[in-house]
Length: 238
Image (cartoon, rainbow, N blue to C red; front, top):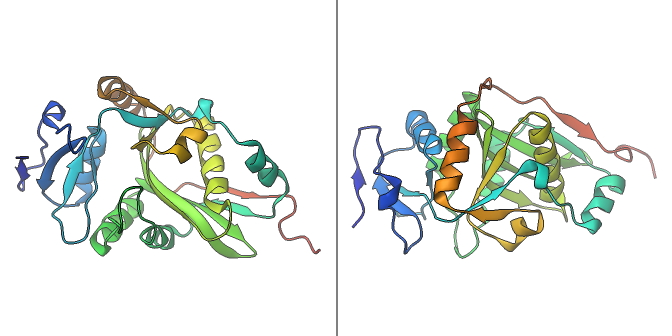
């Protein structure tokens, strides 16, 4: 059995998380900004299917990406240099998360991004904690991702794409920008081959929490991120 959360803003010790399914810690509670921020501060995130109660997770090991360790595959590097595209941050957050709702996580048939999740993260975005990285082509939003930033720690949540490589372009620009801004770690939550190709790797929960506590305590101002990159060929006539 796992604990059922009430109104109190508290989570059980991470050591009590289940090993099967890996990292399941608690159920219940709510998706208020205060609870979500407390969860991220402790290395906990919500993930649940439609019709389920809110489930809270802290898997061990944890998939992470150190921004300085980003690996860009050769084919994508060519796309970054030559494909017409534009990257923006925080100009279409609700649209990005709504599109992500149509993309299932690996091993899951449906989406966990139900309407209450969309509304909860849009509240975090309004408060300056949640952010989107967006790929635009020909004036149309065609891919992106979103996550949460606390201190110098970024917690990736979900991504989607409507054109080849669109979400990857947004991801690479975000990781490079995070490195420039002094962010030390990106939480990728669970291992995927896709993230491993970009340099993601697994670390133990103890090491993850040590880095999280250090980085989340660093000063960083909450608020919208202002970034815009236009590739040299974007907007040119054929």
